[in-house]
Length: 183
Image 1 (cartoon, one colour):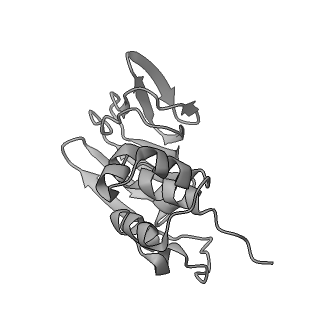
Image 2 (spheres, rainbow, N blue to C red):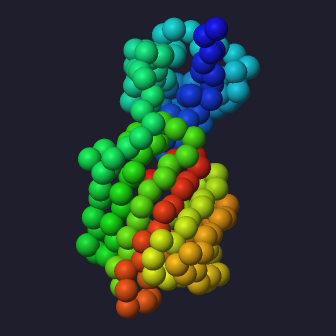
């Protein structure tokens, strides 16, 4: 039996991935925020023309949006990873699951060299979890500073500004998982 697609949930996920509010998406598509909300909650269905406009704004098309034929990959190797070095912040991010922004959670490996930090992340919906594979770090959540070291984990709702810094003399390596995807 074929599994039905949750169109509203998929549109919401794409909107969040594109860092748009419901109001911003509505404005770009010349629709109301209420209509976008109803579509995301499957309370109404957009016309084909409206859905095409929404998908175009969200960087996709019908073929990719409705594609069921892709066999889901389960194991990813280092060749699949995408890496971003930030010399100014003395950090390196590896996306260890390709296209994780299309999934429910986004796992990354982040290395922060001594004196480095992650970018300051503004408040967003969802949850964040991390596990320190090596080193120690300080998590800054609003005005709070929390020390975490190798073998320890952290878990929080990212509803205020936050980032992680390395004040130690050795690099820190963190497995960090965010839901919904936001990196």
